[in-house]
Length: 489
Image (cartoon, rainbow, N blue to C red; front, side, top):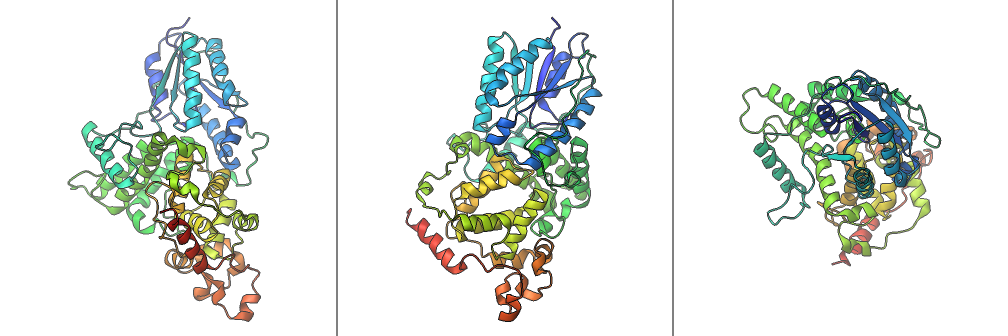
């Protein structure tokens, strides 16, 4: 049997650069004749369905697989693509593939959701039982969940001190540098599988050109953002009508790029703009890169929270007391929200952007989610699920964290009495109505402040619009939400 031939199991890490499992598998193989590395990816519709994976995200995964296969071929690593109907069958499938291809090791990067962790534990057990060596690597985060803790040894539940602790650890260990792509391996006679173009039941209505696929597209986007936009990021990030954000979240979600690569690019941009910078470039220098690094770390924070408090993977509120809230069950309002027909322009624009692009600007996500939970008083879980089913960057930790923040049920949650005035948010972040006009064409000819609240129009003009009246009275809805949370005290 070949020495140290390794099977590397790709999941949400579809790249060859800064891929911890791939790097270590190749290092152990060492290019020796007869060793080498075999890649595997499992098409698992049952898992996708169980986790509300959006068709647009599946489409990005499939297209990224094609590029990954090409990149691996340049390293003499074949990529075998197999099907696994659901998570239960994965350990046996992987063990059989290892035996078939004479692999004595399995390498994979950890996924931290509860079901995924249990699946991976079952895989590890199956390989050990077969006398094979499994290696689980930390890759999806800069710091292994559980290693960043409070002075009392607990998981952080507030972001700001978590960030400070990360920066302190970063200084202590000299950063977490991104890994280079491995060197080509010894050639092995295994044929790569063709990447499927589509999977039955997962047809995306989002044009593929909206989200170019693969590691090269992700790196191109990162480089462009770091060179052209990151310095002004803090000032432009909340304006949905302009290209002020990186839009790298889809690529982080499917793993075409890593946290470490993003942070390194931000540091380089910060140092380039401030060649005489004193102090840690994570915290000092230009506001844009510093703030973007903070936003990248929010993703890491939510992963750590998910590991420390696994109940959030089970449709549970982070704050158990808030589970006593009796959210409304109003299918009519829910359907209007999904279709972007609430009568609140900024909310409707966001929901229509989601349907068109499989993505929504982050500021608008907050507005939409708080309107859903506080104005419509609908259960945050149903909104969270709808987002996951339609977002190209649907990622449990971040999506759940954002929804629970808006619903005032989570960590670092907005106090229950802090409720967005959607009209004020619209006026502040879309002052000229450009974003609204793009996605709500019924209002394209409305001028002035009425673009944010068509109810300000004179009666006759208002009746001529093919646009619904607001679903709820904002003031009454706010009072109701506040009263519901007060009763929990």
